Amino acid sequence: MTESNDIRIEIIPQGSAITPQTNALVESEMAGETEAIKSETKALIDAIKKRAQSEAQSAGTITREAYLNAVKKARTTIEENKLIERDRIEHSFEIVQREAEKNFNSVAKEVSEIGDRLADAAKAAWEVLTAPRPRS
Image 1 (cartoon, rainbow, N blue to C red):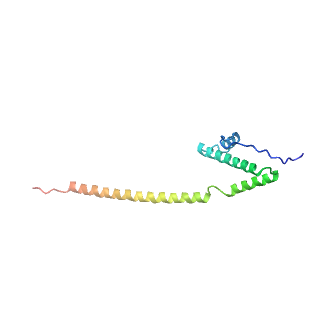
Image 2 (image 1 turned 60 degrees about the horizontal axis):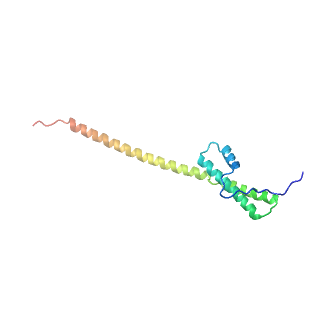
């Protein structure tokens, strides 16, 4: 069996819609996600494909080995450079949680103070209403 060093490059025009392959991949792998997330993911995948095709075209005729090395390097770079780091998400959540607790405690304190004032006002009103009146 002879291994071919030819590379077949599929050229997709810049203004084209999402490819059927990308659509099928995203729909199957991200079944539980929202349409907005799926749509953006499809666009990202197709943008990566277009960029790879553009790079391959600009490089001219390349060997199979050079192409595979370029693809491996791109994959490694994408895997190592996370778009959203888990630690940053957790830190942001902690900040939001602390602020929510602080706001809740502040609101609870204000409600308690208003309750105390209303109780004092009700007590004062009751005392005025029930106080003996001088007879004239």
